Length: 242
Image (tube, rainbow, N blue to C red; front, side, top):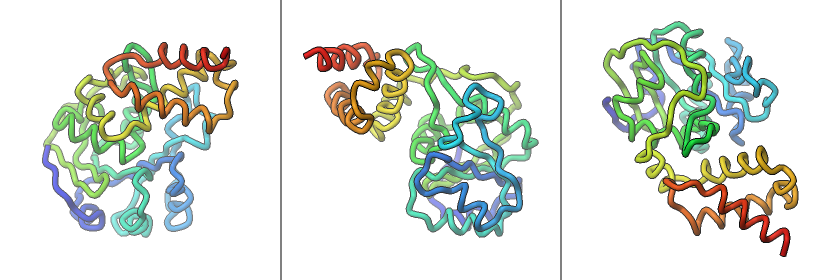
């Protein structure tokens, strides 16, 4: 893998393979709306469609082809948002790319299936840097990727069969790097675990207050290589019963 800082406009004009934008539906920057307003030449495809999460429209990520001269690329180059998404270049068919991305909806971490924030450029950039050439195991036949002002490129990689999620386990060293870089994914995963396994406890607190409690808990127990959920659940139960 090669990596270098590069403006997005320059990166897009260098690409010989078709370019696709990965749009983060959960981003406050509203990249999906900006795509429709500025370009709209293709219909973005929701990456949770056909999964049990097909109705999660407010947080669904999307994939859409973009032309090198698209006004949307200019918007993406200028926005101050760090989580709007990212762009990639590949010669593989769009249906194959779509299936590989959909296969990353959830991954294994500490024995649990958790949602993978691959659509968040702020989160993905750390993973790409950690995995290097190994990143093409997640997205085979990838030529190049632009994320967070950084241009990544790969040589030819072998195609892989599409795999249903969750198939990939987050390596411990990548988890450590992510925890140092951004604890947001850990907080989100703990919130989701609590909602799934103990809804009564989850709704015992206003959601904003609960997130603050989880964030404080994570700050005191920041090691990513242990399962924090049992201790978090016990602490919240004690607080409710006090």
